[in-house]
Amino acid sequence: MNQAIVPSIPSINYAPEQYQQLWLAKHQRISHLLDSFNPPAPECFDSPVSHFRMRAEFRIWHDWSTETGQCNYVMFEKDQPKVPVKVSNYAIGNQAITELMQPLIDYLNQSQALKHKLFQIEFLSTSTNEVLVSLIYHRQLDDNWQQAATKLEQDFGIQVIGRAKKQRLVISRDYVTEKLIINQQAFYYQQQENSFTQPNAAINCKMIEWVCSHLSDQENRDLLELYCGNGNFTIPLAQKFKKVLATEVSKSSIKLAQENCGLNNSSNIEFIRLSSDETASALKQEREFRRLKHIEISDYDFSTVLVDPPRAGLDSNTLALVSGFETIIYISCNPITLSANLETLSQTHKIERFALFDQFPYTDHCECGMILVRKINDQ
Image (cartoon, rainbow, N blue to C red):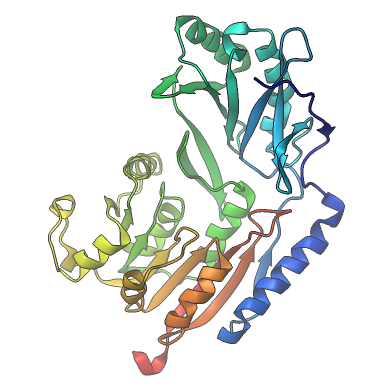
């Protein structure tokens, strides 16, 4: 039971007046890290200084110095992980999140059915201000909770999900629909609760536009994508290729990608649930996969591969696979593993384009984009 009164600060790690200085230091550090591979000067894409984050999660702290155990949003500083800090203003959150936070917590504090043993709240929002709220509990949820949550959803015009151990109750639906404007064209994406989505929508649009702008149309060639997620890059890029084969290990992400394909009337994409290792085996025709029974791999004429791997980067088998392509588009959320992968890729490819995207302002993290082309003597 939480008994301490927590301190309060306006927001954690938010210093807009220092943004440009922090961003400059970040891209200088990453450029220095990658200097040995002789990349061109990076194209640098900065973030809005506030209201950029489309996802947020907060622990809930019950202040038992009050008569009713008032709920507060809290976070924890890195250097004091056991000291809860009350969040009174989450200025980096999307406008829809920041405007909802205080009215929502006030509402929850008036409802014993909703606040009892509430442990955490997660927000997922869109550029068009849809919001999905997940309420996470240290107790099983009953009919009283469901009735109160239904009223909450109706009163605020949001989507509500309740989660507890081995329990997930969806009041109406478990996703929001994002609208991204890419080169003046609208693309639509279902984004599901608890599935990966890009946290910074403005930077996400810049990343997709950057990749599109540096690829010539290849209407007679095909694209392979690994780690395709919900089709974030796949669907806009498909317009530049004859066919696209996109793979992802997550079953839920593949389902979302297929839904998003339909939302955008994309007809030249096949989304298949395969790991990068399985994709390599399939392309080498080392084994057959029932998931590929409706696809003839030999019909594809791949010129380009797009990879957007997790922080661990590409393993040796995947590096061997992508090294065989004429063009590699590498989107990285970890410059350190990108640098390690370039030790291999730079043997066969040169870096033609290099970009830095400030996906995570006020942190040490940065998204990198590279377009690599096969060296002439390797063609």
